[in-house]
Length: 434
Image 1 (tube, rainbow, N blue to C red):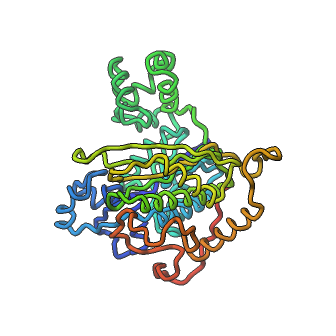
Image 2: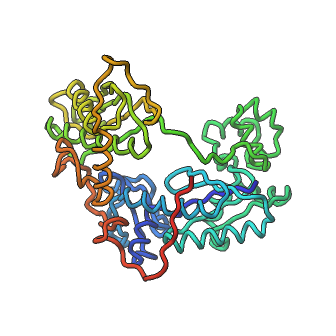
Image 3: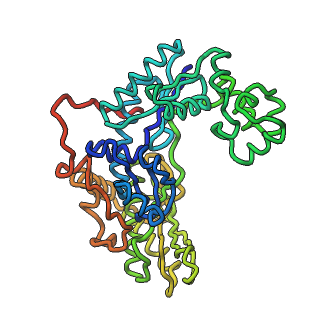
């Protein structure tokens, strides 16, 4: 079976360019929640030496001196782009495993190297044409080799964004020549040091070592890495990752929060968003954890970290019940006199909504018979009119506690008023891979 790793190039920056083509060739930096750190860079910004994860205040002068365009992250738009990219990839592959927001593994029947290269180039062109997002593809018999090929495809402009690891032993050995063992996907600093202590310095050393020996010094993980480098697949493509185990919604505040009302409003907004995610996945939650944090980097301030769990009985996806439970948990965990920097909620004990066990008569909480109709109506309106068009009053209206996002482009893929202009033509057929 031929596998491929498709990875969107500089994904967040590419999304901003797809919405505004005048940014092509311009260095771009995208900032994290609250405009704190660099989370994405275009190739031009990387060439300026702007490091990933750097606090914005440290690179601000460099950005200003070189005309770098700065954007606050716009995760809802990036998510929309991700869905479109994955839909396009799903139509081209026999198997699809969505690995992250900007990466996916694809599965194809075995084919000659030349045919694989041609297929990769067609997929890349199709995704770019339909979504505006450039991708790189690494194609090989195993996931580990795909990862190495993908990284090389990004760096090698002559490859056209597609690298195929040769099927032959000689070709694969030549491909691995010069790759350090520590650059192999899955080899962390600890494992790299262990391999070095036994004279395994390169990917070829690891591939050609006796698997039993590797297992003794590096465990099953190391053995599988060695086999994958040989072209023997140990990791299948998993199309259905299974239901999620929990739902987390957490944000940093735009400024320190001391007011109890503002804190309760933020927790309610997070809880309502978590409930919306539950309904999207067809799940119910049996408990909620509320947590609040001060700014650990401010050593001049009193520090506090608090967590509190509140059961949800019966399990529910009702935003009203979940927000009420969150408020009860917050009342127990909040302490006066602290400046809170971050807060969030986590829904736990998830079960599919269609298989939940009902409580015996007289036991457990009461179930609102109109709950499902109400939540479906709210979701339908918000889908049509935009998120939070209909919301619980407890989640707030002004939300002055929200994180900074002063540099967002304002572009949207769902709001007609903020849609980018495009040429008329046939619309792409979008089908989400099942």
